[in-house]
Length: 238
Length: 293
Image 1 (cartoon, each protein chain N blue to C red):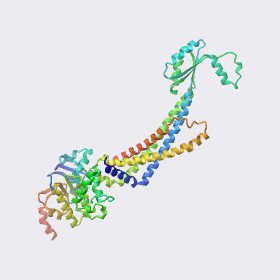
Image 2 (tube, chains in turn green, yellow):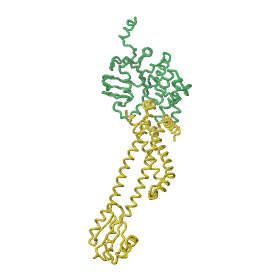
Image 3 (spheres, each protein chain N blue to C red):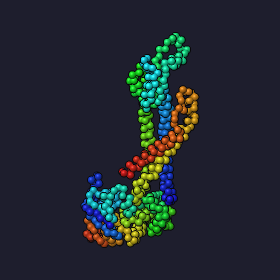
Image 4 (spheres, rainbow over the protein chains, first blue to last red):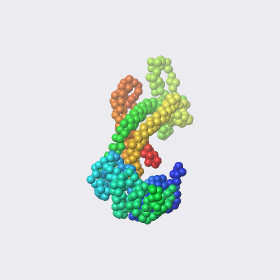
């Protein structure tokens, strides 16, 4: 479903965000991308929805060579890849319903599809009863669930989440993670870049660790910290 | 037809248009001023052109025949000249008619009874279709063996031709400058709206809206700026047409203000098209630049 081959990304200021990264993610996976700030997690996600082009290497998403994709084909890729951010990126002058419907309307969906799809995803994220509210009237968790609903309304095969719980308290964090888990169970491939050790350790799913733009660990049922770090951690806190 | 989609689209255009209302009004005002100036200029140029054409059309080539040439030679020459497509009309003026016309023209200025003999040769008066051809046609006629001399107001023709040429060039320059100014102001207005809606545009791009779809509301906005400005200008020009032109015509009766062959409906349509076109083009360029960045 997602494949990176010998991918490097160097920004114009010389910063090497990714360095010879090789990665395969199967359809229907649930994967955490962990590492300190500035290790290349967000850059890697940006390559997948073609916000960024690699300096070298091949990026394939759902059998599409994203690094070779013509500019005019990018919208089609993005209808297949939902993206969720830490800061939600909701439109403050639109209601929950309008924010979610917006993603369909601007891609030219028919009104009857909008009327069918929006209630379906609002139901999935349990926000049907708040569909007429504006983002400023919602909790952080509800705002993030609205953003997830918007990302899902086009039925994407892949959901990319960049620090989805970064602005949330533990209760809202659990709510959002449970939702992402349920979405994954329905068959959507979910890739989450996160700093949240509790979330990663609770879910015990595949964990890919980045350091200085390189993949340094890839564990099938991993923890946030590597084995050595977990052993050292109690000593450090003592 | 999916009315929900149409309604959503126009709601977005309306929201975008009213977000920066002051700036939109500035753009509309600039387009209006530009179109008023453009309209006035085109009208003035057409009037001057009509006057010039009028004068040029009256220019004749006088062809004087040799004394040895008889009426048969004159008719023969006239027949030969009428085959030239550049020539509009040929009038044969026998020497007796020529004298009569001279007498009529000079009556009261000199005592024409002193003319006891007819000094004039037989002549042809030739008019051309396009005043620009006067010189070439005159030169061609001069080559005929029965022609003694050819006369026409050469200087006047050349000066008028030069003047209308220069006026045309200056006019074109002014029109281009005015249109550029309007385009720059509309482009800046659209850029401000694009900036105000950058979050929305980012989300549209994120969820997979096509560039054309993102562009379209802004193009509509540019179109509205252009067409509303042009409509305002047309109202002002119409006011001037009924209020100002009759007063100028009364004060300067020698200027034929209504001599132009401008059709008001076509003229209005042209100005509206220019206004709308400038708006659309300016919007297209400014959004395109933002989306590429």
